[in-house]
Each structure stands twice: as structure tokens, then as C-alpha cells.
Length: 94
Image (cartoon, rainbow, N blue to C red):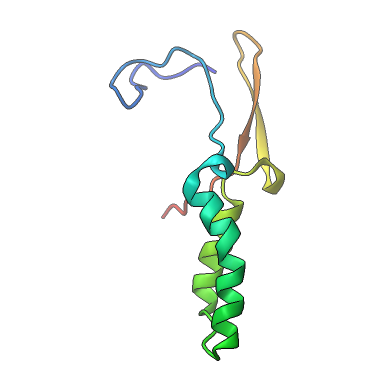
């Protein structure tokens, strides 16, 4: 995957060419939300105060973000022919 000459990582260095997929399902925040969000939704509904639709949408989008099972691209380097799966991101642009 040819990168522009200006591409740099967080430390300001040029990347080494090694891609490592982000795995959101392995983060502590993700596991907490995944485990407790459904219970919280039921609790609030039982109290007669359901979460607004936009809040539910945000949580559901967060739980789908970066997960291969919700969509991905297969990318291939023209130089070395290495292939990687890149999960769709939930980031909204514009």
C-alpha cells in the first residue's frame, strides 16, 4: 500500500509498513458497554424513561464500529501483494 511521503504515525515517524488491525471488542470500554448497555436500556424502559432514539443509535453504532462482521474492505499492497481486512469505521465525516 504505497503511502504518501508525508504520511507519519503518532510519533512523527514514517510507518514501517506493518499493519495491525484495531480490535475494539478487546478494549475495556467496549466490553463494559457491550455487557451493561442492554441491561441499562431495559432498566430505563422499566422505569418509564426509555432512552431517546438518538442515544440508542449512538450506542448501537459504537458496538458495530470497527467490527469485521459489520462490513470491511479487503486491501492489497501493489508492491508486496500483502492483503488485509479493514473494518468499516463509525466515524461520521462532514
